[in-house]
Image (cartoon, rainbow, N blue to C red; front, side, top):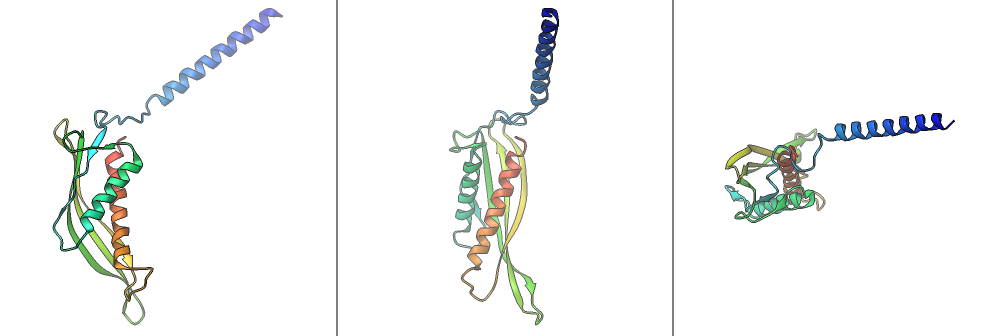
Length: 173
């Protein structure tokens, strides 16, 4: 009887050990420390350059980028002198376009497009990781509705840009 119990115990130990090895091996390829850029742990986000006549948009977009990276917490926000990477940008355009018309061919909805050029650089290895022109929009109803203003549309576009930039920057992580 003891021999049967010992065989079962050995079998159980081997089975559990094999399961642990397979679990470790299967999960070993995943990492939270950025396999593509493990040396990048901090990012600087200076105030965006502005090529528009829109007051306050570049400041709001810069703040939204800092908040998005702070919430995400994959990269720590740092000073340009101490950061491993930098996110630089230029606000190129803020443009209103008609979005939807009613039956009388009057504009019912206006889309406010924000276009920004973004460059994400590795300061340690002195190379550009990615750069692109990103355009997003927010919508509002013309006519002064308190629940739908141009400022709300700009805020919506800013939030979309911040999310897209964050996702593209940390997607390799």
